[in-house]
Image (cartoon, rainbow, N blue to C red; front, side):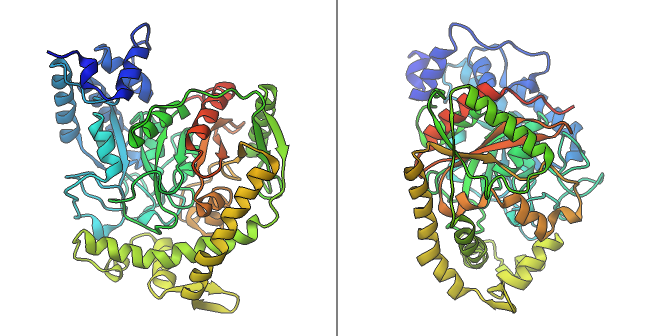
Length: 501
């Protein structure tokens, strides 16, 4: 029989070698394991995939009131875990994530499981193939526990989904305070990770949908540079803005997922000595609540003490250019992209039929008033969206991208740093989905989304209220690995966030 190392991809060899000398302890509660630690213990044979998977499944079933899952695949996950254990015993481990359970947002295709995108009209749609991002994880040996709940059609930030919820109440719930929302639209993935229902998973991000729930639930999430990951097999909003994104408890675990998806190796943590971090107070630090301001300023002070250089900067056109791109692009592309997706995957549905079945009032109102009739809100009522969209694509988005590039160059900064959201988690309920709250919670995450640059949210700490606060790094296009390396260094300085009570 050939040595196991020869059967593994290069990433697995690196991780295997790193774990030979010493490794994490096996906790009394296996669900406390993070992604990399779980993978290392599985490789060492100190934990079986079946027992780890069973532990997560039991915890998920005991916390149904969180509304974290739309589909929990007990039978399929356990069968896959037993296969993983048998493969490892036979010396044929597949990769860096062999036997590790993960979760996937319910708008990213997993073969054989429903892909509802959180909307009733698609509850019977079962893809035959994995999305490429999922396939990469499965090829590396990962096991899918289930599909996580989300804001309906990914069109919101609260996770108040009236179509999919437990009897205990509507809306995905924040495990740090179950009366509050977890952010969205990748609400269920963020909650599953925070509540120890899974060690990591996938979300999708159009204007903040990975980073916002990561921030609200004390985790880490990466929006990669647009195009870094394949976008096939994901229910779309807007191709100019959509991307899948990895989520986990730590940046190091996010970096491991990113390496598996891209076929590389995780970066080493960077040194913060002399790293230049840009702070634009006129936009990203405006109107913060006290919780967020206190944690963010404390984090900046810690980073400065660790050797980082905090550079006060100005981006005078940011707000204007972002407004000219955000909604005009998302609302116009939403119709054509969804129509093409429904046809390609032979769902037998039109955009109008999907719209008729939307359960959540905020999303239904958006589709009926704006997406389907191709309209935008103007100063004196609704206007046709096409000319505004064309101007956004041809003029304003290139100008926004250039504004970012000029800013990074002018101030010689490695990244921008700011609170991921201006507020900590608010009460869950119908009001959480208001337009006012949407605009508030995407304010800091949206510009980078429209520019197509990478953004990484990491835990900055717990506020006095006991709620997590996130800190975001935005870097130049293509700087994903550098951003992850900086994030890994920063999380060592800022320290871990305590788990939910």
